[in-house]
Image 1 (spheres, one colour):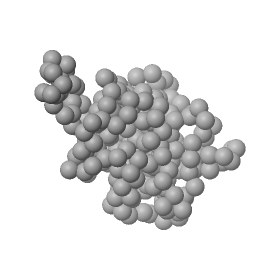
Image 2 (cartoon, helix red, strand yellow):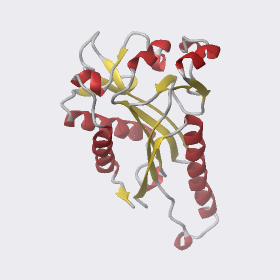
Image 3 (cartoon, one colour):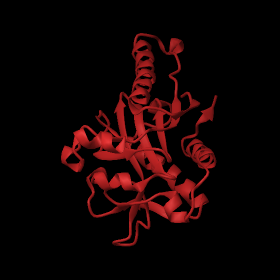
Image 4 (tube, one colour):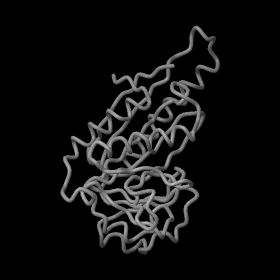
Length: 234
């Protein structure tokens, strides 16, 4: 079980470019696993693990089981708001990525950690919850809904601050989560976020009343992910 994990900060990067980059790393891990199937135990090669942080220019993405009707703007109108749109291979419905948001893509072999998709999702959420707690933001989960929510236990007041959507194959993961830090929340007005129409979306800057230091939040989140998963940075 190789817990050594390479952290990669891509900065601001086009969504499709980051998607292709993820795919290359994802496929490289799968290739090692395929090769190991033909090898005796004492010749097995360790599989790699990666954690990518980045920001994207304005973009809407729809998961493979999502409803395109949850995009409330016509595709030919996206240029007017400097946004793009992709139908992709993760789980979940529609979401938005943009400047001021920390997008995290763990590309890991879960067999190096634990083989439980439900636990994987809850561990990502817990890392975000603990990060927000460091800033005095009370956040948690809502039963039956994926993601992290502010005031989750207050009916009518719950608001999503972090969306999750992942893809796995043979216990290798890609895609991940998006934490709203200094995000322009007006872009969420053009979608039904994650297909949920009766709950609002928020950000750290909105909850705290002023913009946050992105680099600082990234470092706190990186540390919380390492604590929760047992990542050993290389």
